[in-house]
Length: 441
Image (cartoon, rainbow, N blue to C red; front, side, top):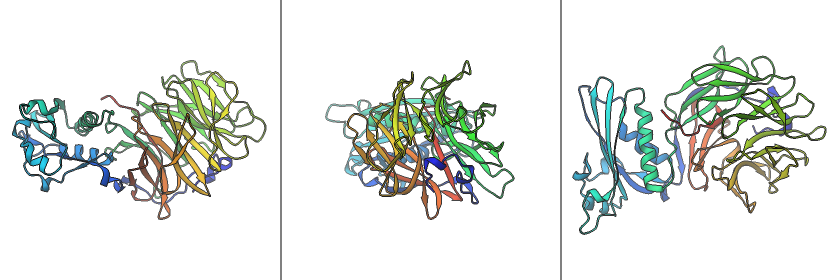
């Protein structure tokens, strides 16, 4: 259930707990009719093993499909199955309206070592006098092992996505989220998985609530709030396992957010009275208070701007929660949302031109996008009780939590509102999603 800002910090309202199975499904609900038709031909495999660790071409095709921009052709509908660009008969694909074709191969070069070769062919580029090689948009190779096989496939999908759209792909990323399973001794889990839900790892489990995970800019650690000691505390955890307490003052310790350079952490503390925004220098461990409001006002959910010069935050200083902006150096805060009776959980798009937020209008909570310059608001979702939006690092998709059939699920929507995906757990609930930055592996 969507929480009011006044009850956001109460542990009894933090997490509705039911039996949970963290494996998530991906269900495309809307937007494929406008996707561009492409083909990812099954990659040829050669080696001493019976088969590769995973279906490399299927991972690429699924990535392109869940971007909402592409509709990969089914294998059984393909007019041919080439494994090299020189084998591609362009006319066969053009007749079927396919815009681009991906071909490639996986070669097992030694035990647990694989070489990937792939090409991307522009079907509509070839004309009289143009060679097959000139129709290539990509002609590359990569190496991997079993452990990194899926990650490299996501990287190849990123490469293809960028070649076709001019926008950097975000498939080789991860998501973090919170799950609950009361059948376990420690029912609350902080989970990390690949952007497609695979390679799930439980980073931390607790008897008490976990919330508000956020990635560091280098993708190597996650800050989050834990109630394991009977009160809200902020921890910083390396994805390799090392864990450090960041803030455990009396009262509220909540809503961590990294600066773009990863050297600072904005957070909400009530150690001096009201719930205010503070900035912590992660090197010196010095806290600096940023806001200073009157009694009975809550400032929370800070988020840095892409250039690190501004911080968005949610405040009920105007009686109802709205989004404000303040300089990282302090000073007067400026209200920037006016449409709807409630706006919260705001963050900038990577280009700084828009903010993504939760908007309530006529009692309904939706994910929305607001133009920073004009203030124009666009509702992106048609789901109910939406919360916790988190942007992909390329700014094209938002992952968020919502309610469906009485339980909380994850969902995604494109930032133009056209494409929608639901990501329910096979059982139980998942919530508080956070999309990682670009990763290097």
